[in-house]
Image 1 (cartoon, rainbow, N blue to C red):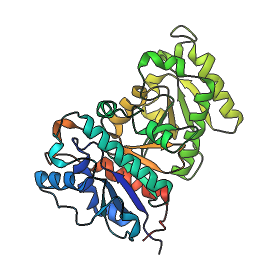
Image 2 (image 1 turned 180 degrees about the vertical axis):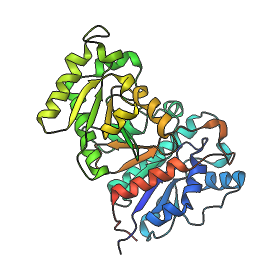
Image 3 (image 1 turned 135 degrees about the horizontal axis):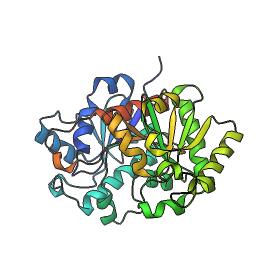
Image 4 (image 1 turned 90 degrees about the horizontal axis):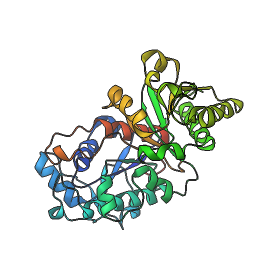
Length: 335
């Protein structure tokens, strides 16, 4: 029988719902059937959240410096000792919490690169807290790209029936047009096609959205990005044998008939894909970073400060992220 893969799970911002959903995921039957979850976080924070939310306290806690010296065969917490529970104010943005969240990410990435965990699933972080802590990079995707020295990456949101990837992510709308190049659009198409084939077990069709209303209406709207940038990238992808078409009007890219005809949709900017995806699959969606040398998945929601430490957070998205990480990672080596 194949050994269960060990999946690293980062705790996210201590002041958000990350600690609660991690605690719930540690005991989730579906997770335990498919992998061995190891949470990279702070044991003191997890104990405080467990008490506040009426959840079980983590039974197996090991320090960051010593966990590599012992076999991992059951759910565990790697105590990064990045912040004291008493220093966390639930629901409040704080530099100390941003710094702690970064420590969890950094430690988990190092473990994945060393082969100590088979993949990493991340709980939500708060971008403002990261900035206050002086962390470079606006989010997980960018941090993972830098820490793994990945030459090209993109974000993809995945549910059973839908896969949506992004040419740009955490930038202002005014910055998007200048960031669109045929080369960048092509690499996202290529990453998407490879991911779809891995996820579905077969090559799939890819639709590529335009940037402007009605995909530019033949140059009437916008700066002709469709003709200058997107169409050439689509043509190049077709020459490489990828089943792709576009640019398609963004307002019809997600209608049922279109979704039924494709396996992946490439979007030009964050909200072009996030809004329809979350309308369709909010509780089931998983964020995957394509192009990394390691497997990284994540929840597709934020820190939910308004319900932090209250026992009201659903672990559904984190559970799905862990399950997908285990599926992509395959059988584990370590027991």
